[in-house]
Structures are given as structure tokens and as C-alpha cells.
Amino acid sequence: MYRYIVKRLLLAVPTLVGAAALVFVLMRLIPGDICVIRLGSGGAHVDPASVEACRQELGLNDPMIVQFLDFLWSYITLDFGTSMWSGHPVTHEIAARLPVSLQIALMATVIAVLIAIPLGTISALKENTWLDHIVRMVAIAGIATPSFWLGIMSLVLVLDITYLATGKAWMPPIDYVPFWQDPIRNLSIVLLPAITVGYRYSAVTMRMTRSAMLEVLREDYIRTARSKGLLEQIIVNRHALKNALLPVVTLIGIEFAFLIGGLVVTEQVFNLNGIGRLFVQAVQNQDNVLTQALVMLVVVIFVVTNLVVDLLYAWLDPRIRFS
Amino acid sequence: MTIVAPNRAAVAGLVEELPERKRSLAGVALNFCRRQPLGTFGLAIVVIMFAAGISAEWIAPYDPEENDFSAMMEAPSWAHVLGTDQLGRDIFSRLVYGARTALIVGFSAAFMGGAIGLVLGVSSAYFGGWFDLLFQRVLDVLMAFPLIILALAVVAVFGTGVFNVILAITIPLIPRCGRVVRASALAVREIPYVDAARALGFGHARIVLRHMVPNVVAPFLIMLSAFVGQAILAEASLSYLGLGVQEPVPAWGLMLQGGAEEYATTAPWIAVFPGLAIMLTVLGISLFGDSLRDAIDPKLRDR
Image 1 (tube, chains in turn brown, yellow):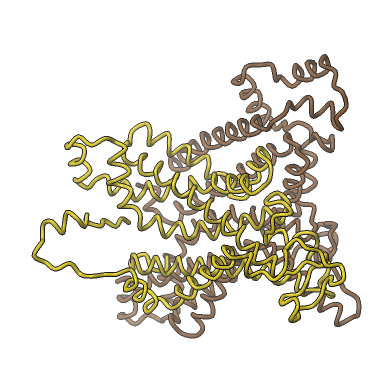
Image 2 (tube, one colour):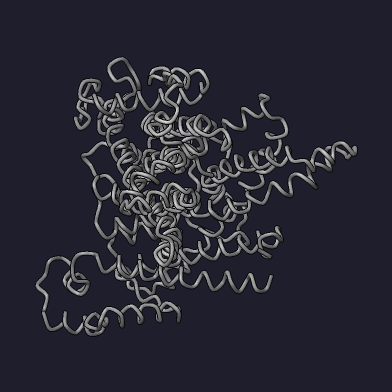
């Protein structure tokens, strides 16, 4: 296991360096001189001397490879620069907006898994009954529904229902409060976005659980377990589900990318000041420093998640770590 | 999983005495409809959307950009089948024109990303060695970016608009295709006819394109249908964020932009119909893709 962990960790390093290189190149493909944009916002005349000084300060006159190494080093030392738009340090901007996104992501994952695994299992056990058909319909609808539209629709519903019930339309609040300060307010903010983002997650996990379960239930050892008279409950919980969950674990890691994508759009719908909204604002404001920092943040989160999932997988399935 | 379709001409040449079974296109289609009712339903949705997109000028009763300030936020009626939006534009007409944008972006991005991924994936498996190793590392890097994030980063560089959106969605699809195709192509590489082709003195390009690509087409086609759905969803998301297709090009994501939920109590149809259109189209494509997979390779069923 130890050797496997080291091997996987070492494999993640070139991926991260490669991703940094890609981000570095992309950000330098943006047309226009960053210093001219910075100094001359609004089309004012720009003094060539100050542009030169700015280029010198930002190290834009150094060779590309030196610039890239500087960029890498600053990220390793957790120095992400200052936002070109707000003037605050990027770390500061991110820290202020991370909690809400993190809470939604975690809640969405928990909700999705809690719904998907039991439903997927039941669906497989009751294959081709009406229950199975309903679960499959719900699942396939989840893959086709854009999460932002689901968010809009749930907002529309909440507004309409509260309007009809009380005569005054109620909107979920938008300014984030940590759970320990005001649990009810906190939940009224994050619950709808979490369900919105979690639906797709849940749908994909449900499909995977169902198909993996169907496959496992046809294995010989399940027949053996049945023929020796084991309780159906024990067969399902101890023998079938444990093996069926292996591919589901991998899927949860892969789908995490969609979760982040969903967050970007859903935060916009619910007007939440999270990482996703910050990212969209950074792109809209052409704030390259912030954009590259956020892309790298997402990549690191994603790579680390998949690393954890892989390790979990190896821990669950000894065949992986010994091969 | 690989599907190795024997070269039909070669087989026909070897067993000439066997009468070749007639399988007309209509016969294949009829068979598909009978066996895959859900897939046929999905195909029907896609065909209807295509018809709407192609003949938008004839179907749409109004100009999608025409503001009628005497008929703002009108409920669905005979004059406006799906109602009008906050600027008095006919929602049905906008949906019909939006189908064109969604399908153009969805299919171009999926086909371009798919085609590039296909050729790269097969070449990587064929050449092996350092090329394959390098290709895999590049795939790892690209796969570390969630689709929307990479698309947004590309938009940040090249700007918005239909063409740039297609480009932005194409790039993240390439590695997703390349990885799957490479895995299939690795198995095809081991089949002796590849070595035989080499021994006959065929060039690399010819072997990759004429001999290996056709043999990985089945898993590729299945993946392509999923890509089209993903690309349509991605385009809608980008446009909704204001970083995709720009006004005045009609797009479903754009129709939901600008606070569709503000009119929740007064004009909910503004928010309902564009989303339904996106959902139905992607649903149709997924159902068709699933059935296509079942029809092409029953072993992959339900994965």
C-alpha cells in the first residue's frame, strides 16, 4: 500500500506541472499587453516608460522559461498575486468565497450518494418492474437537465409557492452565514443549490450502481450464497453491494468535475458569492491573475480528489495495489 | 472492448458462393425502431429539433428579434403559442431559432473534438513508444480540467461568440475521446492484419486511417452521441453565464439569462420553455445513444 501511495503521488506531480504550463501558455495567448491594459484602462494615453517599468516589475522581459519557473515557484510558495480588478490579494479573495462553495459541494455529494446508492440497488434488485422504470427515468432526466435551469425552476417554484401561501414571494437569502452561527439561515441558503447540483451527480451514480449491481448479482458466488441458504439481506449487503460499489467509487471521483462545473453555473443562478461566481466574474472582467489562480485551484482540487479516490479504490480492492 | 468488423469486400471475395444478405438502409432502420422503442423516441426528438433548426425561417411565426412592446410577458395564447418574454419577443420563434444554434454548436464541437481525438488516439496506440507515453501525459493534463472550467479558460483567451464557443467546447472533448479510442485501438493493434499491412509496405497514415480507425468506430459512435449532449449542455451553460453565444444570436441559454426567475409569479413561461427545450434535446440524444450502444454491442448494455 505504501509503495502504491508513493507511486500515485509521483504521478500527480507531472500532471500538475503540465496543467500549470497549459494555464501559463493560455494566459499569455490573451491578446494585448497586460501592462498597457493595467495602466491605460479607459483608453487614456499610456506613457511608454511606465509600461516598460511595469514589464520589468512583472518580469515580462525575462525569457519565457524563466517566467514559467517564476510562475511555478510563486504558486508553490502560495503566492498567487493580486487581483487586477479588486486590487486585493488573490488568496484573500479566494478565502472569503471558499466556504460557501465547499459546503454546497460537500452537501451535494452527500445528498447524491445517500439517494443514489439505495435507489440504484433497489432498482437492480427489482429489475424491469415499475419501480425500476421510474428510477431509470429519474436518472436519465437528471443527465439531460441543465443544472442552472433546475436552479431557476426551483427558485420559481419557491417564489410561487410562498407567494400563493403568504401573498409575498420569498427568496432564499444570498449573504452566506456559517452553519454554526445561524443553522437555519445557513441551510436556507445552501440547500436548494446543493440539491440542484446534486441531482445530476445522483442520477449518474444511480445508473452506475444499478448496472454494477446487476452485473454482480449474476456472478457465481451470489448463486453459491443463495444455494447455501443465506438470507437475501446478507447476500445483498455483504456480498453484492460491496463489490458493486467499486466502480461507483471511481465514478464519484470523475463526476466531481461535473460538480465543480455545476457550481460555477448554479452560484450564478442563486446569486451566491462562491468560487464559481468569482471565476465567472474574473473571466468577464478579464482579470487574468485571478483567472489563472482559480483554474489552478480547481485543477489541484480535482487532481487531489482523484488521488484520494484512487487510494480509496486500492484500499477497497487489493487486486489494484498488488498489480 | 473492441469490435472487429471483418472487411466485407475481402470476406465476400473469399466466400463468393454465399449469397450476400440484403440489408437495405430502410431495413436496418425498421429493425432498430422495432427493437429500440425508447431510442426511436429519442431519434424522433432529435429529428424534430433538426427540422426546426433547418427550416426556422418557415416555422417561426415571428422574427425572433422583433420586440412587440404592446405584447410583453403575454401568457401562451393562439397568437403566441408559448407566450412572449419581457421584451415582447415571441418565445416559440426564439426557441425554433435557438435549436439551430444549439445543434450547430453541439454537433460541430462533438464532431471536431471526436475526430481529432479519434485520429490522435489511434495514432498513439499504433506508434506506441515515446509518442504514446507523451500523449498519455498530455491527456492526463487535459483531463485534470473540468470541461466547463477549461471551456471558460479558452473563452477568457479567445473571447465569446459562436465560433469561439465551438472551439472552447471542442478542446476539452479531445482528451475524453482520445483516451477511450486509444484503449480500443491498443487491442486492434495486436491483430495480425496491422502487421500484414505494414509488411505490404503501406504508409503509417494509410494504416491508421484506413485500417485501424474503421475498427474502433463502434465505441467511437456511442461516445459521440454522449458528446453532442454534453456539448449542447455546455453551450447553454456558457451562454447563460454571458460567456457563450452573444445577442442577437438566439440561443436557449441566453433566453434564461437576465433574471428569468424575476418573473416567476407573473410570467413563469419565460423560464420554463427554453429549459424544457434543452432538456428534451439532450434527453433525445442520450436515449438514442443508449439504444445505439445496445444495438451495436449488446455486451456494453447498461454501462
